[in-house]
Image (cartoon, rainbow, N blue to C red; front, side, top):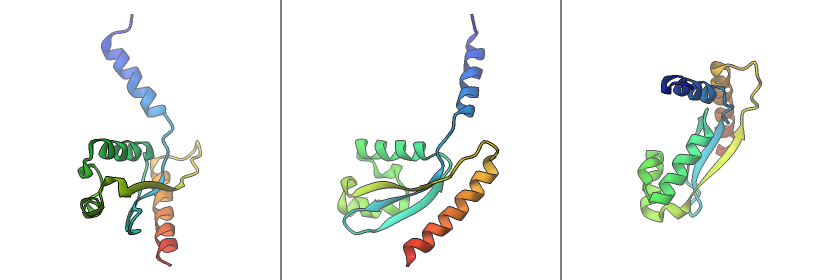
Length: 114
C-alpha cells in the first residue's frame, strides 16, 4: 500500500505530465467591445477563474482592467474568448511555449488594432 507521501508525489508527477492548453485569450464586454487581452500557458486555469467569477459574481477574480466594465454592465456582459492556441509539440519546453505566446499575443494586438 502506497504511503500518503508517495501518493502525493504520484499526483504531482501526473499533473506535471498533463498537456496544458496555452494560447491567447481576451475578456470582452459584449455591450461596448472593450476588452483585455493576454496570453497564458494554462487556459484551463483562466477558464476556471472566469467561471468562478461569474458564478460567485466576483469581478475581483478577473483582470483589474475589466473591473470597471463589470461595475457598469455586470458580469453577464463579460465573455471569455480563446483567440488562438499554441500548436504544442512534444519537443517544446516552457521557454519555447512562452516565446510562441509572446509572438501570438503581438500578432493579435496588431490584428485587433487595425
